[in-house]
Image 1 (cartoon, helix red, strand yellow):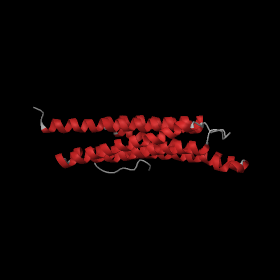
Image 2 (cartoon, one colour; image 1 turned 60 degrees about the vertical axis):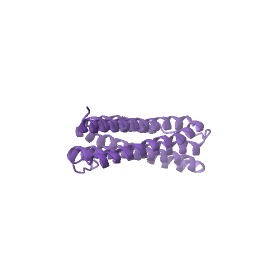
Image 3 (cartoon, helix red, strand yellow; image 1 turned 60 degrees about the horizontal axis):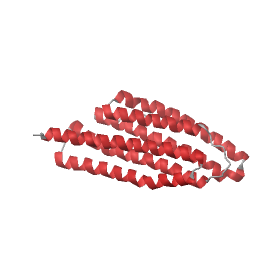
Image 4 (cartoon, helix red, strand yellow; image 1 turned 180 degrees about the horizontal axis):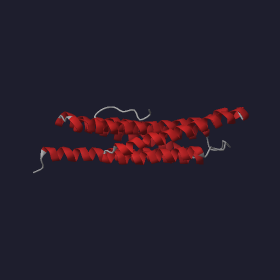
Length: 220
């Protein structure tokens, strides 16, 4: 016969797997969105926007499961923190996917035949952000704060790249004022990637909360 504790552990593990799946979905959203932005593929961009509802539903399910476990089991200490952390992390992951959707919207706004050369640094920013997702998933899975702490360093690199892209974009608008609305979409996309990475740093902070039982600011 399965004990109450064993059953609780099984439900916790199931919740953890759902969060890891949502993390991969968010990563895929960014990866696909950046690809279609460079390709100017408006139809695929529309599909990314449409698929965002699936990610929203997955976040809702994680939250429902976590709240139900809190109500049924009335956990304390680290078990309660695990459930609170699950809710917080799922919220960040859903918002990360929203930024993938925002990039898809920028693709549609830019259109297929804009004739603008897109800064290759955008792709490098996105690759780094996706590497951060992989690290965050590992840190979450093993409740490893040493891994989580590395997210802040990676986020600093993303921030620097963001600053460089914004400066270059402003220079580009100065010499191409007739295309300012289109050129600014590049700056917006850089901002979406930067915010995507910020949410991953939030996840790192939530892992610290889970392990240590108090809040930490990884951006100090």
